[in-house]
Length: 125
Image 1 (cartoon, helix red, strand yellow):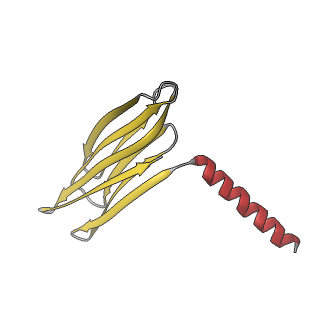
Image 2: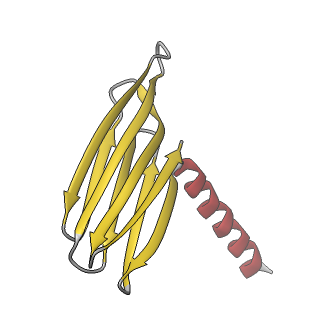
């Protein structure tokens, strides 16, 4: 019985920690010529990021827009970034002072072996 109570307590603490982190993430995946492709957008209270990867060499790109709100005067703002590389590409954002994250929206693409893959992801805080 004591072990059961400890297990319930540990589970409750773990769920509380996860809830306090407040991370939202959304991913998409596929394949080109048998190689795995993936794209991901994630956001927390004060930051956001996006990532695209490919299991071989190709043209990999990510284009992302990060939205935030100023908690003092409720004005909103956005930042946009893009990145490209051969196997993976990523971008990251940090909310300005006195702001909190709202959303990250991203487009991901991979071109290799005369084939292409693309996906859109978003994550909301």
